[in-house]
Length: 344
Ligand code: UDP
Ligand code: MG
Image 1 (cartoon, rainbow, N blue to C red):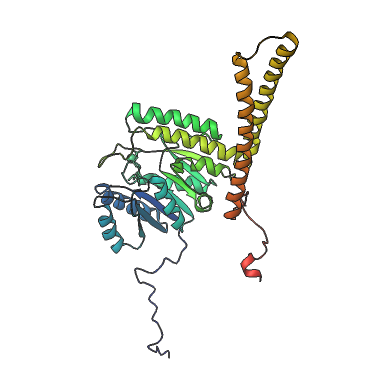
Image 2 (cartoon, helix red, strand yellow):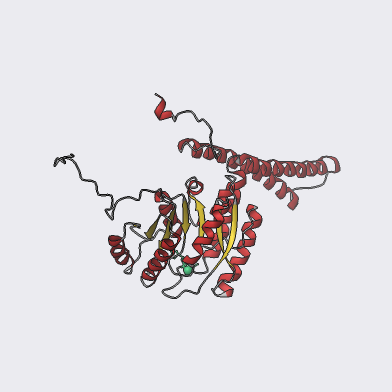
């Protein structure tokens, strides 16, 4: 016969707030900025869909400093549903920061990002996961039939997608679609800044991951307003330059700056020598020639580039060394040695 003493905690395996026994399969990450009308609908549709798929999941909602009732609504929903986790930012930090907070907390094997405004369709999640299960690390949604205005949304986005594809070598029709599936270990390696979230597939490709896309539904915004204006175009362009640079030269800035520098010095010197020859041998006056200016500028510019390259090298070394960041990404290890901390 078993006797329970009062000191022994009683275990109740059916407690509704117990952690799920099965490992989480997916973490849904939802950035939210003033979406009070959409939240109840989104929550209901997500929950229905995920329960129907019969997968163990958590929803991580990030309230990105909303000024409406978004947080109050999330608070009420989370009180009744432990699968809903809510992170509340102190102020509006932007969609990229919201994603980043979600990624930091995700415990699922896969992360699914989705907008809160119901423009994406939770019903697509099953197909995206199936695709991921075929062996892809990133499955990007493609809003083939996008319901947004043409001139200030779809057209700039089409151009951006072409540019990003060519610049990064990762060809996707729709970088801007929020509905995407990532293997969690892929994004946990990526530090996000600025507006970089749309470049994750391209940045991830540096790690050598398999990226693909799948057409998904898209709807016009039903409630609330879009949070972005036309200025996003410029920011995306600048980010593209950053990403392109990071992808190709981040670990060796001297290779690109140094090359420009050397070329610039070379042409500057040749031009200068030509002018010197004119002066010495043909006794021409060179003081008023624009070419002289060019020669001087090229040489100065060349040394500027060289020093930029050297400074870049220093910055990169600091970056990798202070963060203990390896310059490689491991996929798998067989018979790995015990971790450093366990050795002693
Ligand atoms: N969002 C956010 N922080 C922001 C801007 C947007 O969390 O600073 C969220 C927003 O609530 C929505 C998603 O990001 O869930 C996409 O924003 P939006 O629908 O305004 O972008 P669009 O669809 O117009 O490109
Ligand atoms: Mg939207």
